[in-house]
Image (cartoon, rainbow, N blue to C red; front, side, top):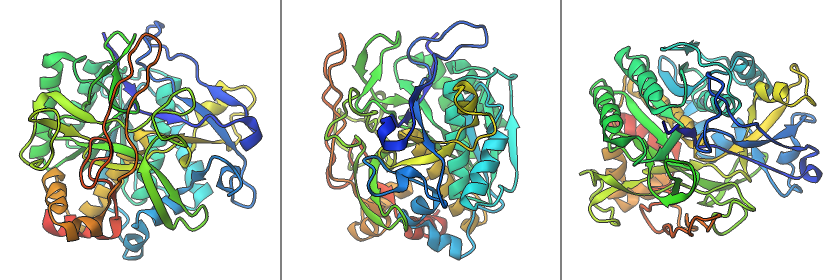
Length: 451
């Protein structure tokens, strides 16, 4: 059974930079006690340290690696205008599908909110459709990132965290089906994926049927596009192959890639963006943490809403959009499990961690959709056709998206794997950053009025 791993990377900054030791989580273990293969979650992470007068070390300009709190991300992408209008995601529900369990997520979210001056969500529900799969460090970090940053973008929305029994394809499909069958929320975020050939046609078709039911109910679907550029691990987890990431490449899903954002560390004023590859021009794991997943499906044909997308024949291209995912310039996350895993931290210490990857983008785009639903007083549903219609108008496109035109997602030779030539960013849509990142102050009202 090939397991799906979360698409998440963490920052590994030298102790001299952040005053912390690089900490890599242990190999995840299934509920049965059997270790999963390398395709399972095992993201590296580093403690961000204690804030002094409300400022973390990584928010200081002199540091080589930087990080952002909610205030800076909200400002950079234009959410503040919406908040000033009273649009906070009220009366909407974001569903986050993850696996296993995080016994500290309630306290993590509370500490995150108190640290950054955020209100508690309208409600926070944790649901185990098939039972509690138990603690898993990699997925616990994913849960913390997803919950805290979906909430950071839509502070008044309800969060429903739906946890699969394990990270197997069947269990994740089952959790998603439960969320759809029970109509839990308005938008579903999925920060995981794998090579599209690995689940096989039966499981792919089963999930697509679930997505069809979700779309019929007006539920918006989002998924991260991957952290290995144009590559994915093969189904045995032994080598890299050229592949788009499933389920982000399903035509009913909005696939979310990653950029490296440069913004003012204090005000969050937008500076610039390029394709995510941290401080390097290419995706290079020896010195970096990954790069934006993207490419062309081999199983899904190009949908009608992608008429201008060209590439691998007449196939579905991903991602559709992007969001900040750079680890240099990552987001601050409170991850209580990390305090327990690493004996140097007490369980009560408010230790924050810095994370990036395409995992950061899917829950924040889910927050954006919740804000859109709030203005609309109802679900806007499937957003892909509208996004590509916006891109067809140069004026609308420039007003609603940051078009990313720097960088690529080439994947280097690693071990016995050959180097994989990816794609270059370009004007308009590309298979690295999709249509680009949102200018939420314009995009959100436009979608609300036109969907």
